Image 1: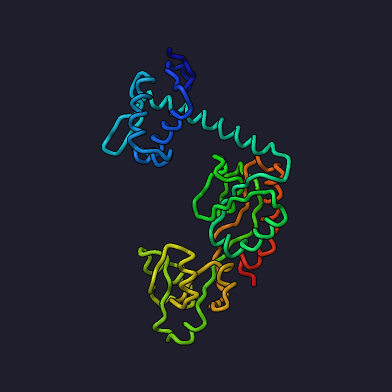
Image 2: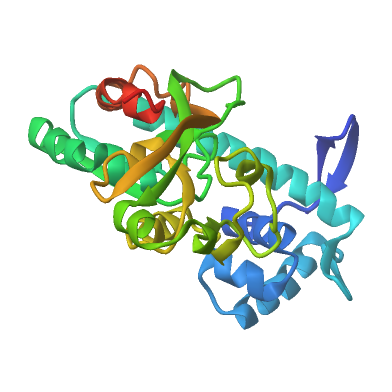
Length: 304
């Protein structure tokens, strides 16, 4: 049996899928472009995706995707099912978020996304205190730079360094993350000035502006890393001069600040979805995180 559904300002005839899992497969293939990528998203074997796609094409009455040299591309029929799948996904996510928001007691799970440096240098001890205060709340911390989505319910609260947070989200700006110039004390004492080197960010930068603006613009980059935590640890170990986050460097006894110069990196935000802002456990964790970070605003902004 075929049905009519309103898509893209017109009515289209289509054969509906039998269950939501088929729509999930359509979205996985649409977003990844390959059978293997879709399989990884759904945690199944790629041969399973291939077999299911054949059955889905039969149920839909036509090809949903065509194979190209660049991967799988949706057909016009596939585009209609993708639109339906996106709509169903949006409704499902919203329903789950409303369900989570309806919980009235101070228990249940909270998924928090926070960058590793913020977690380790600003909040590590505070999370232990939160656990003691609210033992019935199960806090799941994703300490990574991965941008988990509040809209897709990948996270309930996110802590992010950004100057342009999505306008529909709610939260609080803590202040400005600032970067300063630092080096290990022993490195400065034992290394002649003409032999000193900078710790760089990546292989592409040879003479970046932040070095030109420093007290030692003539010094070259000696070693590089694209990871902020690695650069910090190398500076503490005496690998060279560095420009790093004030809230990290100022907590290291071995590091000294080279000048009063600093650079504004980004604003620091604690954010949640408006559907969750009145949920008791979300509200209490948001306030807890905001209060903890505001207490450390001085070190975050380099005012120490």
